Image (cartoon, rainbow, N blue to C red):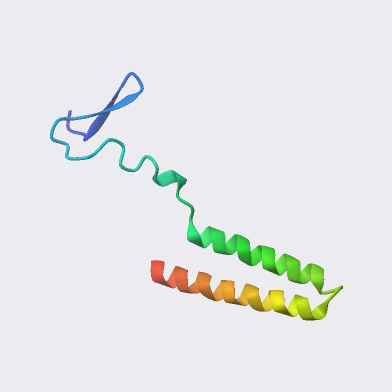
Length: 82
């Protein structure tokens, strides 16, 4: 078999000499995407700013400013990834 691993009864079995530890990318799917975290924070801040705009304009402006800071971080992160 020419692949680095094959399945045997539902288990991953590495070929001898494959040079790879067991399932190196197995837990990679559980890592949080930092860009997604920033997008959620940005959306949350904008929603809060919108809610506050009818109640407290000063706090609404503060939330909008925080959302702008998060947006700058997101843009910087995306530029670094490109």
